[in-house]
Image (cartoon, rainbow, N blue to C red; front, side, top):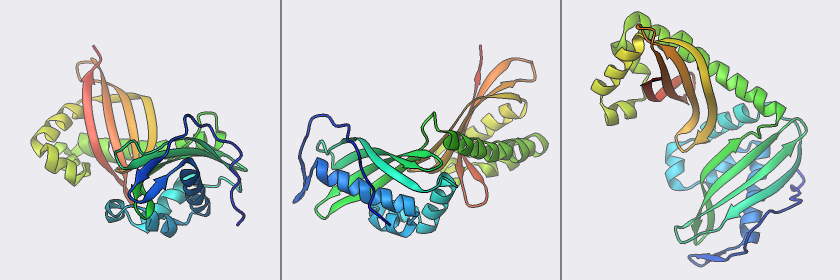
Length: 253
């Protein structure tokens, strides 16, 4: 595969920071971005995994990364170019950030990286892919993701909550969240939510974060007293299902 062409840079003041014995420069971060961009385009999950920090490698597998790339990119077509749109060099915290636009024959994506600066060079501590708002392919992908997550909420979670109650529905909440927050508080929220009729989706967003692939919903609802309310739900994708990371209900008054 030919090397990606980076046609333009949007840069501020040129800075040089030190990470151990390795200089962090605009040239070095630009080159590293190009290398990772090629791995993303080739969907080389193993290559990306090998560049990640040990902390991230403990949390995600190369199979997980492969699934994320395939699902996020979809049928986006052949690569055309990669444009570095901005970066922030190490300001003393040991990390640098870089983002760029990857253009394909059928769509575009923004690729963002949080890089840990080490004496041996950069390591990926966070990789994010999101779609430009004006990209047709990206918006279709988001609609697909929203549909899958929405179906889980409607047909699985809320259906279970209505029919079987909070003691069963709580099993869809992430185990770590249950441990941190406590089942008593979560059950109290679910008991309130059981009497709510969801009427509409106010807002939806899709994101890849350190927590994995996240779906964030803001829902409109009516209580059994016909009072308006808003429901926030954050879902994380698992291999065959979703886990609830956060759920809250607010009065609309």
